[in-house]
Image 1: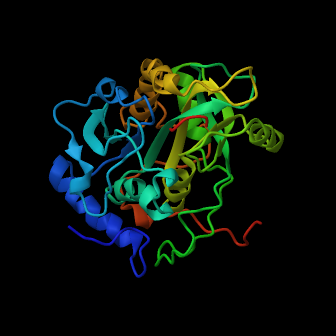
Image 2: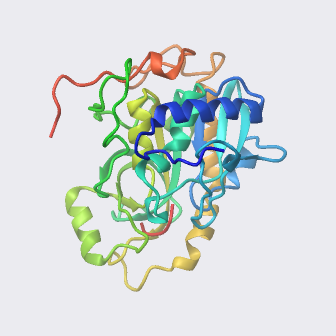
Length: 320
C-alpha cells in the first residue's frame, strides 16, 4: 500500500486517482462507474434504498484512502445499478476538520471520475441560515460560498488535456441535474456556505454569512464540487437542513440531534438521487433534451472531455 498521501510533495493526485480507480475496478467487479453518490452525516441508510446489497468495499484497501473519522462517516462503498446508471455509493467523506489536506478530501471524487463517473451527487447536512428553510427540508445547492480559504486546485499542475486549474464556476452546480431533481419531487434551492469547523458558527458569523448571501452553512461538499467540475463532471448537491444556525432562533444548537434529524430525511434524499440518476440512463427520461447547462453524459475517459479553462481568471451547524 502506498505510504504517500494525495497532495504530498511530488505526488500527482490525478495519477494517484487513476491507480486507485484500477483497484476499485478489481474490488467492485465493475469496469466503470457512471456516477458517484457521497452520503453525508446521518444519510448512510440511503445506501440500502439505492440498492446497496451485500458487504461493502473497504475504501481503505484502495491506494491513498484514509479512514473517515467524522461522526457517522465510514470509508465504505457499494457499486449499484440505478436503472442503467452504474453508481458508486460511498458512506461518508473526509473533512478539513479531520486534519486532512484538500487533495485527501477530494480523493474519492477524483478516483470515481477516473473510474468513469460523469455525474457526482454530493449530499450533506447543513444549518439553516435563511428563515426560508425548516428543519428536515432537503435543499438543492444552487451556488456556494467557499469560506475555508482552501481549494483542491492550489498547487496542482495538471497535464494535458486538463491544461489549467482556472475553472469556470458559473454553473458549478448543474442546472440540468437540479431540473431533473425538481422533476422527481418539489425541492427548493439555496446558496451553501462551507466553513472549516469543527466548531459551529457563532451568531455573528451566521449574520455575516447571511449578509454574503448564504442560505445554508456546513463543513463539507465545496472542495468535492470544485474537484469534480475541474475534471468535467456534472455536480448535484442535496443538503438536509438539520438545525437552525446559531442566533437565528433562541437557544443553543442541539448537537446531539443532528444525525437523527438528517436520518429522518433519508427517504426523500434517496428518492431524489434515485430519480435523477435513473433519468441519466439511455432508456430513461432526460436524455433527449438538456433542460439546463447542456452538459452530456458520455462514456469516454474523464480526461478526454475536461471543463474548458476560461480565457481570463476572475477575481454548519453540524458535521456533514
